[in-house]
Image 1: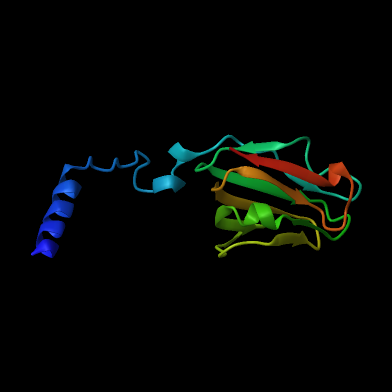
Image 2 (image 1 turned 90 degrees about the horizontal axis):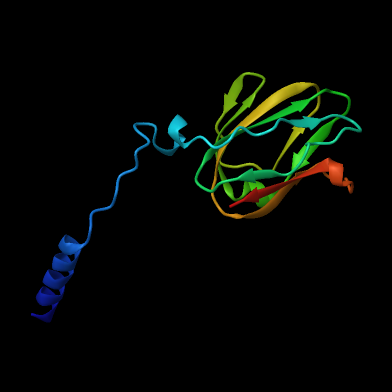
Length: 146
């Protein structure tokens, strides 16, 4: 009998709770253009050149597209497992070919090309992307998710 009253009380509390608000993004949900974050600067992979002009600031829950260009002057990569583990990657476009991975650990260019990573910033924090093995500040970009 107590079980029945407990169930009835839980159902009454559920019925009295305010309804969850639906998002206003439309059919595409959080991948909608309505949820687009600010345009990000292009990252550059070129021997002896800085990766970025400055730090990047993102807002949690927003959709972003990060473009990476390599000039082919050297085999260069970007690593940043902390960043990649705290975003949701929708797609990676490599020279026009779309890939939908479960996640990323790093990306590497063996020759000149362009890569676009479309993602949603998830967890607030301080992250970075850097050229592996490099020590210089210009060989990394600081990323802040608020």
